[in-house]
Image 1 (tube, helix red, strand yellow):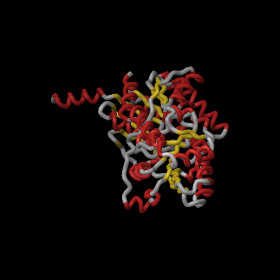
Image 2 (cartoon, one colour):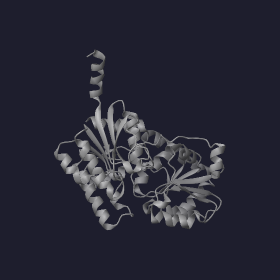
Image 3 (spheres, helix red, strand yellow):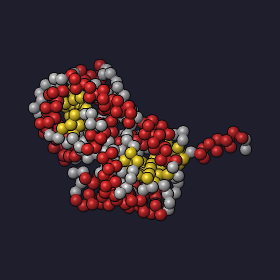
Length: 374
């Protein structure tokens, strides 16, 4: 055997075998955990051999590799009740093939005691406090909370993306955690083209923008109600309207209510989404039951002024430098004041400074790699 192949073999063996469990998979498609996974694979592919577990149900084209990461396709959905067997099966496969497992979410909690018994290193990012979301019924909430408990108690290291969640787990579980937020600098500023304006005429004027999933704790109803009384400013809301009764009801009520309220179905093409976000005059973040929301940090990285629903997580994410609302009337007042007062443009400058300090993928990947090696 020649010296060159042997040398290459040694270098390969130095790479950490990192298996990522708990996402819909790659390529990333409209999800915070998926975007995190994609950017970790991009930033750390020289140091880690990644394997990512993917839902075969959500992959129209089933690739074997993406950004150098091996993709393993599990024939179950990554969401809903199937997320539990989906994550559990993924974890059982990963435990025998990895140096370290990165588990995103807590659906695999029921097998976590077994994995801890085997001595496998599992770094867990639970995400938000999912069991508190309004969309779940009482029994589902209990199951989710049980998964959360088993996951947190048996994790080798716990990661949170927001100081609010860090404080919560410290108080509820007496568990300390590593604070690592999401990156948002993959979002790019793109000037509107004539073809884009033809497809989306609102791009030629001033408009407010909000992007979120159609679920009650994202408070889209509060946003839409506020703009019922604002006739001279366009509002564009991008959501998966048909995925829930909540979304369907809102779409039916507001889609044709007034010309200034524009409801778009979920947009998965990154470039189109970036054009729409880049050219907004104001971003309105309505989430109330998440940690550091990817859509929020992406807006901050795009140098947009942001108004946030008033909750602890959003105040931590923006370092108290945004404007906050709890009701439709408060939001209506803020929007009207914003378009009459150019001094509020300082919001975007302050939030961009925060984003550059805290929400870049190079910083996020470096923090995760440090945990992988410990």
